[in-house]
Image (tube, rainbow, N blue to C red):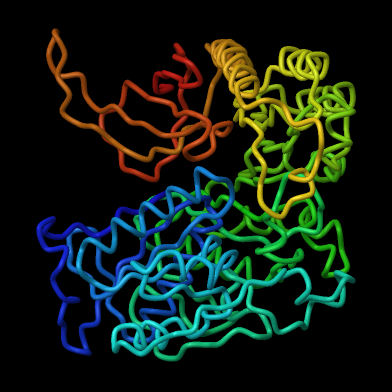
Length: 508
């Protein structure tokens, strides 16, 4: 969830940095990109608070604005650059961190003089000291990017003790740096150390299971700057879950680059199947949601746990990417329409109400009209709850960027439009099929005192059912309430739909 840049006087672009006493050094964190970045930002917030920095919001002047950038695709890179430029107009110092900073390092620093520093992941453990340097005007040498996969052993089980900085893993990693005397709101030092400070009061929070990826998808550059796959130990995950529960979180969204690989570097590929019920048993947590699943790695036992464990949402975030076998092979992925449909059938055989979402890429090099038709056949028969449609574009440093058979950009755009329209129709139909279904909705906002033509209408709540993940899968509006608070889970009967969104009435 993006956090806004602190807003200052728009006419003050040429003023010097804010001059606050050293004891009141103020920092604003701006987060772009995915839920994994949100976790990283909250780790940075915990480290900064422990180092004596005061975290401020968008309406307060900040001495330093830290922009946690995204470097995934071209549009995300542009958004990151635009945000850094906007932050530089406020008057304080500007520091770039995150994926774009890690991926381009000194190149980004050279092309963006508006940023006072560009810091890589290795700087996170000492982020407070690095911002002190920035505020004091001491020059910092931007890091020189390298393939972070080379920092860890090839064998996953040999990575456990490697002292490599892994964002979002806090001081649980052997190379992590602990912080003493953390202030209120920062995770305590007892037990497995949790370095995190919440940046909002949402009843939903991401929790990082692992980082990095060992897959070699031809279109993806993420492993090169996020590194090889590294699991967090179960005790660290559980400790952070308890801490989040103590800070008002009711739903945990487990995130990583590839959750189905969890435990392979800890010597147990079934570890996630045991961890999920333990997380569901954490006092105060009402729902666990697992994201980022690779279909080729999804084991029957994990499907069973996701479909049949109380408090674990029957939610399957499956990275299909395409359905045509020839395209999938060029992508260096596995599967086919029939295999994917078989997986969908098995899931719905266990839980007909299960939510299944995916992303697909159209216009991949070599994609033919027949390949596109095969993708459309899969989508039509699978009837997924939500689908993100992306048009292929070359990504620097990826294998696919070197491929022949590139599809014209105009053709890619037409195919994106065509598949998007199909997906919108199919997902709307899937939502409509839920009319009459009983859903459990986690309330995230409440509007009280509403008045209609016939007088007061009571409380209207908006939240998400078990098949709806934050920000990407739509929401559910619940009527018929008299009093309710954010963070409550209510049972409601679906009475209507609009696109992927649902309307429901509170069950008596």
